[in-house]
Length: 137
Image 1 (cartoon, rainbow, N blue to C red):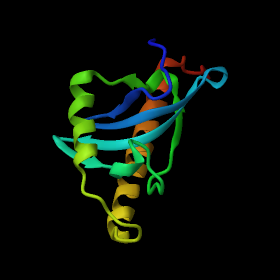
Image 2: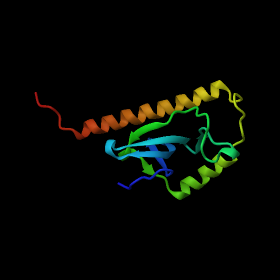
Image 3: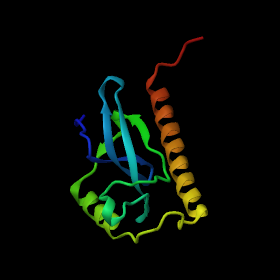
Image 4: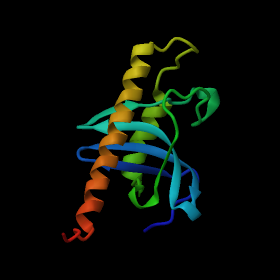
């Protein structure tokens, strides 16, 4: 496994969907990564999440999607060819003033992330169960 570093862009993949995120901290003792979701990409459609405004750099001030703590074994480093277009999309996203984002849009984004995380977790649990020996009666 490649060692991850703070600020690195990684992704989680579940079926045909990828969640791109920035590594905030690597929790080595727990074998977990604290990540901040940036974009959800499914079937060529990119849903940007909490992109920063011009004066904030790449960081966001009021997240609508929560940070996540996820097993390091599932975090995959993103390739430059994936990250460069993603970062370009983040940089060109129109500025939204505080309170101007529609609550429904925020709810839909949060729901999409929640659904993605639940499906990925369920898939990883079923894979783990398949690796374990079955108890004998």
